Image (tube, rainbow over the protein chains, first blue to last red):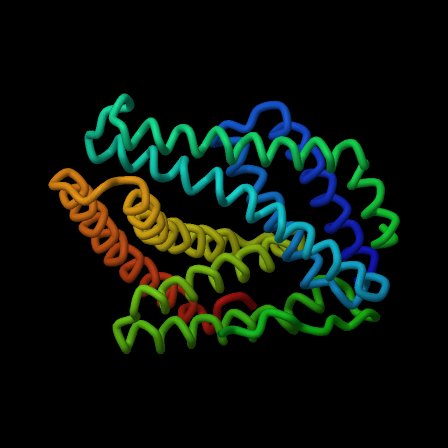
Length: 133
Length: 146
């Protein structure tokens, strides 16, 4: 069971690392959505298999993931708003749509900055060590 | 809400662990959903159900390799559909809040808020239907996952 838990978690960590890299390059709506899914899946694995990880390592990592989710949420909320504005028949050039676009750009820039910092630090390697995967 | 954290038996295989723990987890989840549906859930209750559905789906997915049955995939699909409808409700509510901050009071703001409110209500109904269907699926064949 321990090996199974480690393998599942290691696979999900690899997927997250790939998604972090992709979203750092292009933070379009789809990439941000996929990143959120990858974060949630790893976070669930860490919680579900907590007993197999050393000390509170899983908790510390989940906290980092939660911080990243907040940054992605800021981008996604604007993506959702833009989509619903379009469905409501509001022009992309309307003042409100432009204001949402601007907020989206700012949120995406914050997210990309954070993702680049994660990549520079080689978070996946660091976490593999902490979790003893 | 459903207690999703469980202690696994290290000496047992993943399949044995899954068969010992997951059915109970699923039963608790479906019991809660049925109870919520019986009392016509408020938007905040539906939000809680959405989060629980998401967590239980991801927990089940961890054990996908232990199940080969089509029934397992049907459960995952039902959970995903419920999650999508509930997510749409949440999106409409979140967008309404965000646009409320950005738009001055005006007839177009009122029209947009009415559109979003209507959309949320429609998605909420879809989610209720999906939840009812998923609880029926949970009851069938003697239990959710066996």
